[in-house]
Image 1 (cartoon, helix red, strand yellow):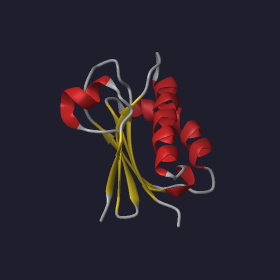
Image 2 (cartoon, rainbow, N blue to C red):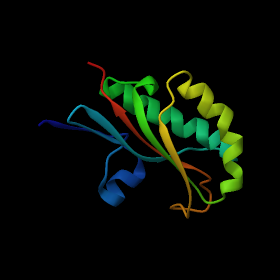
Image 3 (cartoon, helix red, strand yellow):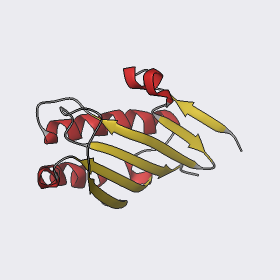
Image 4 (cartoon, helix red, strand yellow):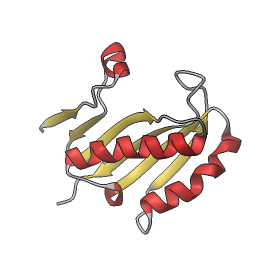
Amino acid sequence: MMIRRISSAGPFEAKIGYCRAVVANGFVHVSGTVGEGPDVASQCRSALERIGRALEEAGAGFADAVRVHYYLPDATEFEACWPILAETFGANPPAATMLECGLIAPEYRIEIELTALLPQ
């Protein structure tokens, strides 16, 4: 089995010891990803853009997503992300779970972790 690591060169990767995504055994495993912006909706879009770049580098896209986890410090903010997520995944929605929990820093309102199946 070959393992390929995809780095975004973000500051936390070196500090913590992880990479943006790992391609292994026909899957793309994208690490928990936060975004930039003043509110949960803009951070959601930004995180999805980062995830999209990792998927593209791996040879996949959002249509190939099979599982996604959303982490939010305040579950009541999740509804603001629903239209963005519906637009992103369209006719190919993955299995999903939303969890309310603390994130690495208080300015972050959402973190998204995703697994995709590489297209054949």
